[in-house]
Image (cartoon, helix red, strand yellow):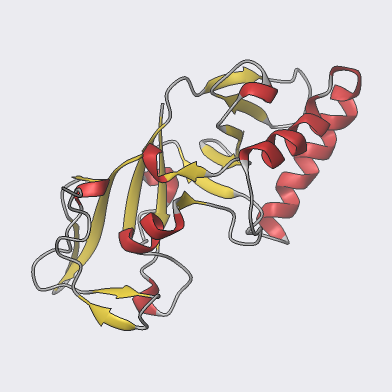
Length: 199
């Protein structure tokens, strides 16, 4: 299954990362959780879906998603099931390929949460997310760089805004004449060749 994530370019003074920053970080991780792992995400989701606690657990999960959206963002990684759902006003759009990712738990109650995983067992899943608000997927687990397949960049041209073509993530090169911000150097540098595979 494919999901999409939009990110600002940190050069614009907003919280975000260019492809170089995403690669350096190893993928997408919750910004407000340091040293977050798949194992920790499994433990957190398990407390909501333990069979004997499912009724109360789904209610708590729904409240946690509302808290994430309205009060304390940054605990999870938000994505969309399509480019439109990932909000096209960002500077970069990333396409993530998650084999086996599918709905696993859809509670028959009033709580608008569907749990998607790449394995029927939470204890074995490497990708765990909650589908909310139509087609938004909130990931408990990180999305590793190896699962980011493609990226494209939004470019302003006079009175219009256009997107570059999709490029294989690890083959990304900054479009000719453009520059990206590298936080590790604190300066503007060209990134041509950065994503070239090592020989």
